Image 1: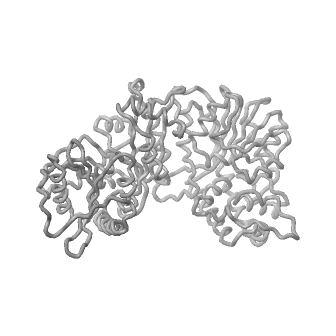
Image 2: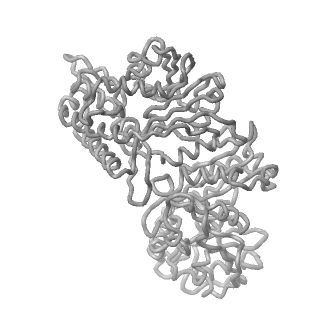
Image 3: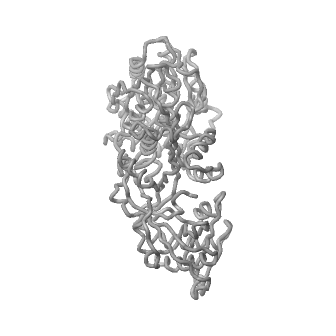
Length: 609
């Protein structure tokens, strides 16, 4: 639906829409909507074919529930006018839906309107449709600059869902005058569970309202316009079906493009009917300047982060290691700022996993830091709670970037999170240790060193071992340990060196398993294993031999307690560790009972050291 469908249909796997052939017959004048992004070009052109004009292709109320009416657009503009402070004053409109008459009416009422849009292809169309008094420029919200507190109101109509909420509220705090108004009119997710499909990644309504409060905004009106907006879906389906052939011809589209657009509209129609999604008007007033400000961490802020890391952990973090940790998959990092100083950080490292045998993406929480001067504020208004709750709301759970979160907090940190209602425990870590063995070879197996990324033999063996392990752990949760992962995690680490060995049968050369070792002053550590679980005793025996060869006094490894029996069978000595495995209980996510004692985690999973 309007912006939300553009957001969904322009994902990387649907780039055909961006690259549609826009050739026009020389004998026909091109329609004025060709430069609009899909699906706006479809909606606008279909509206023109149906009604004779195309302005205002948004979720305007449909009083009779059947068709578009020009009067509706005026009523929609009047609705906006009733929510704004009286003129004169400056209004910032974000996303530029000014193809309708609303912004022109704002200018006529005495407001000065500044519109910004990130859609460069639509600039000419938007400028043509706008009043001469309205300034329309091409900007991303995050990069837009204006005088602080220079706007009396900020308006986002059908555009908030495509913008990061932290960016919306940060920019509104900067640009709105005291008591200035922030008006959002958009689709939102109203319910969330495992059965829901959220094709456009709509923002969850309750979370948007909560986040606004964290940024010092007061909700002064919440109006549900779903019943008035929902007929727009049926209307679009109707006019697309009516003018299908003309749309395909005039806009150089394919039948498949329109078919997928229609299917997306049908999905949204079902979400509306089931009251899982809706259209809402949210009016906020800037009430206070918050003590702490939440922001997604930017690259130019890394020096401040490294300073905080040094003060928190008493050692340095290098840029190379940081980029290696966070840049492989799209992770997330939230920082907390007090004035111009970074005082807290909450990081998320994306991880591909198997969730009971099915591919999913999880996120490992790490590098949680709070400046020592702010740690006394252990309340639900303190920096730790603000960033943790915001991270869980935005990124972890059903219909979010990551289905699960996990980490390795100590017992003290875990109790704090439990007290806030953020996490619940789903596992613990234990350690096993063994005495090294003499270097004498094993009769039935031997070792092969894996020390370079371009090793085709090692790649094939790693794939075989991982498939066997994944099969054994099909009833568990485990991070994917294929050849791509092993290369990135261990062979391409920017500073650490790991010894990776393949254990294979002496006769026939069958791959038995892969051991990843790290040698340091504490001994020889089994950082990771990739093998069928029945092969663990054989792998540990070889690891003990390698510990002896390298002159260590002990071999040890860390493993989740629920898999301890596989290591206890090798004769190792077990001891408890002060690490807990958490899962989110803050928002709608897989049940704790489903996750408890299901993780396979080793020290290689812990912090990507």
